[in-house]
Length: 484
Image 1: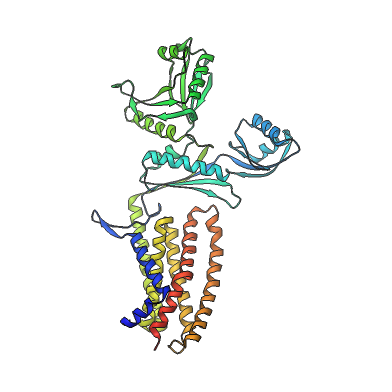
Image 2 (image 1 turned 45 degrees about the vertical axis):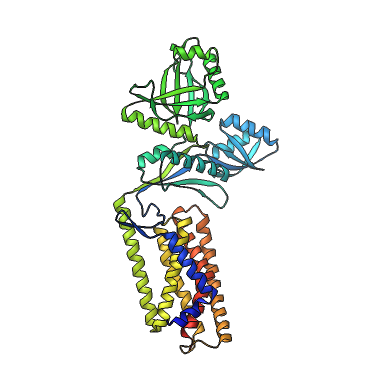
């Protein structure tokens, strides 16, 4: 391309905008060498990066109901019969934060004077957001980088699953941290093996780091502070169970997700203090050695972040080793380069004109770079997203061919008036095609198909970039290059 034609191209705002976005995208991608390795700012999913993924199922349900009674009385009776947390999330919908089969709920609703009208396992969008926030706090406490927590929400607004992706974390560690509810409870033994609930972890205000208590002891543990309400509940529970008057006969249990992490008689000093005033500072021992330290670290994370509002179970999991992720990345690069070469060969065979082929391939690759630049901000690249990039490259060439064939006549650009009409007609065809693709991709982007969401999002963004930026810019470029 001559300098004059290059200047003429740059005078069109569509071309200038495309080049500006290309430069900005290249800066966002940030290709560079660090520690002898080529790296970028692109975010990779677990298909292309070492790490663990967990998909957890909510052990709760969102149900619709009808009743002739007052809603308050009806819900109160349900809570007594189900012994579960129940929240009214809509005029005729309840969230039950324990798992019950549909037939069981139908029977109980009928006995309480109502009728079950709909049943869907999962939680409301607000509860799913709470779970996401708590899990992110736990992962931040763990010091995990590149962690992603995504509730998988259906069209109805009910979240059935939540997916967690962790880079550089083993599968067992991930299950221990995010695959459990993290519910902390203090109980005191009454008679025999019977225990009585005293308080939950939501009354804890501050948490210390794993330490030895007393200093120099081989036993690891975590200190924590109770709120004024929590200290009062602890004192009342200790007095009511008789632990204050006979501490040696009443063990104090600290329970995490149903597992006792600490159990010992109430100390004489602590019992004497509780008889006089509430005590806010407590300490939970977790054991000795590496196992005790690891247990103390996990306990600290759960105490700091709090318990999930609902129980979860691991519905699926996987681990991608570093060697396999490196292999996948290499295969993706090879597939992309092969696709680009194949596209170039086909286009050259069709037109046999370098002045058409090079701008077409250049515009197509520019679109991919802009798409990758946007992806650095909003989307991890997994195998599905890479497949979408290759698909966008193919459909992009198809649309550039439509523009080229529409505006060319005997290898020359027609008069300006006729050119504008033909370009508008070509862009109209492309716009209808793009709209069809977007409509087809929207269900994949919204449904509980996490592995396909990346494909749908990359495809939609690529189509929008093509219609709004690169197709109009190519129309102006091809006019200036081929005009005689």
